[in-house]
Length: 229
Image 1 (cartoon, rainbow, N blue to C red):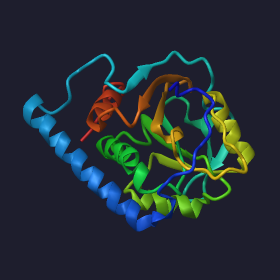
Image 2 (image 1 turned 90 degrees about the vertical axis):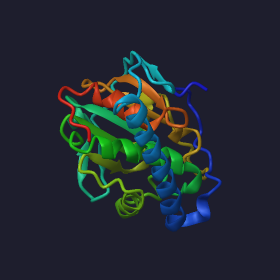
Image 3 (image 1 turned 180 degrees about the horizontal axis):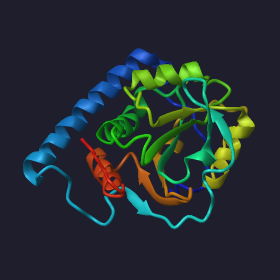
Image 4 (image 1 turned 180 degrees about the vertical axis):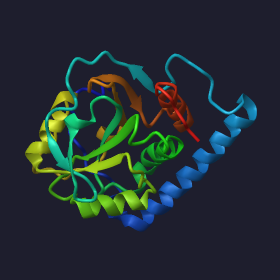
């Protein structure tokens, strides 16, 4: 499937599981990812094999400005202008807090990477997760979600806004919401988009395929002075 194709946001089959189930599923996934990272360190000297592009990623030469002059609201109720993030790398994805256990591996991948790059987050790289369900996902709900998955890093924004604002943020990716339908992460949340310092897509990661440690290593080597731990 082409991740830039205009795709509806399908309903999540685990919608009713709630925060406790999400925490359990993400914790289990993070433990597995931690074991995988330890295995890499043991057999490979501390990092995954150096490849041009890790499996599950695709290089892109984007022309669209994916950091338009749109102001959204983060999980703490603070205004964040997408355009203000230019000048740094940005890893962006689209989420729906109603999705629980089915989406946990995808969430755990980004949480693992965020922890590895925590000293760079907010300095040379930002993570941006925009809600595809702004009618439901208030800042308070996004904050609860971020805390549940262990993603309270200073440089990781969980953003919401009016439907029109979110539509404007999704438009450069060729994505759209479908008002009137129940939303859920579905296929939309499978992809994370790495934006260059001008706000253009330079790489797309399939979070269902890329290894978390490979994604962290790939981002780390793109930073001007990385300090991953």
